[in-house]
Length: 550
Image 1 (cartoon, rainbow, N blue to C red):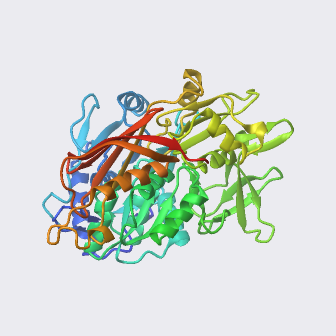
Image 2: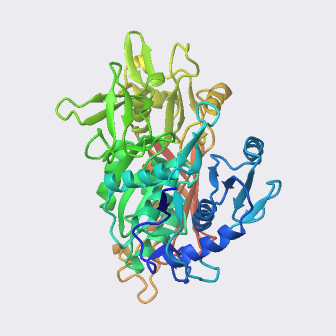
Image 3: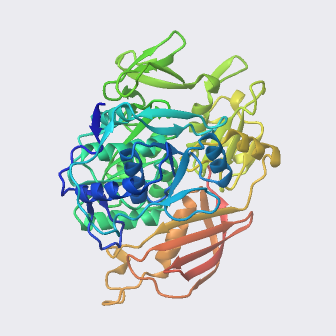
């Protein structure tokens, strides 16, 4: 047996699990984490597989480490509903469940303790895992079919972490890893489990899903003189950027799971003064290539991975964490002036040919998402023989006529979508993958009809805002006109301008730096707005609106 240590880069007293904002407990050190791993591993059921359904990052880390130390294989389910779980139990009968707490109908469940709250017992050195041991089964997203499992040896997991650090590192000692992606997903597992374990970097016990969560976490880490590497999806990043002014001490943002629009990456780099990278990868191979979209649309192979293209541009990657050459479904082209760089053309099945012209669904989707007022959208081919492309879109500021007019200025008219379906949200999973079958259901429901339109944003008026100088000295209060200006900004960002404010009431005073939640509901003639602070209504009103030309 060739053993590879669970952890690398840590000293016994280095922090490994960083507490969430508002948690006054000390970080869990590497030796304390190993003590908790040793205790839990001895208490686990005797089984070949451990289905890790933990939602809390600290419990996921501890449960995974203990199962590996016990010689078990992690099953990381792509979805955690009862139906999916029943299918896993039937497929892997010699399995039990790791969870945050008791779960109904889950079979044998081992609740994973909170290592921040448990008694701290040190154990060193870290346990060693057999390099050839099948460490984890990860599943494809299932966006175009049933999720398929892919086995990863412990050696491959370790080499994948090496690829991550070689491509994006080095990682400074004051960094804390923060992820919005569930660790059951390949990107989440690589970036918030394996990479930290193998590079001596602590992981935050909080997983920020909303802008207010990220703002609170960034402020807390700044107060502790720690910097953040944020692992996220383009979907989360769009919401964070729309709602937050520059959060402090975010040093790096790394996005994956779906294409990252170059304009979004550029806006985040400009407004937040942070570098944004995008990973190209897949469940079968993990991280394969990386780019900085705001600077260059082309990918470079990650770490020691190499890429060969066939005559059709289909890529085969090898090296790094790959035990054998991996042929992917995407087509690439080499940059003429820099042959080591790869331009992503798109999946072969995403290639669209209409009236002698060709493009890809990805290129069409990028054009759609670049339209002001479009919050989310995608082009799809309902079936292989469809004569036209279709699209589903979240665009509160548009109707079918205005959206097609805006699209016509960006794409060839041969690719204008028929039908075009509006939705309140798109049926994406937690990682941002669009479920094709559910998207097709939207097309069948009521093409070209708009749902009720609801906008929401978090914000705060900083104490440094110029309107507050001399305004109620000693107890500054945010002026009503500033609150209305924030509603106006929210609407403007979605292609809507205020024509007139017909009603406005202010229920209570708002203080500087107070977290505000803005809600707007829009119908064809007017919009109702509400601003909440500390769980109660601070302001509300009604306004008429007009569309801003795209």
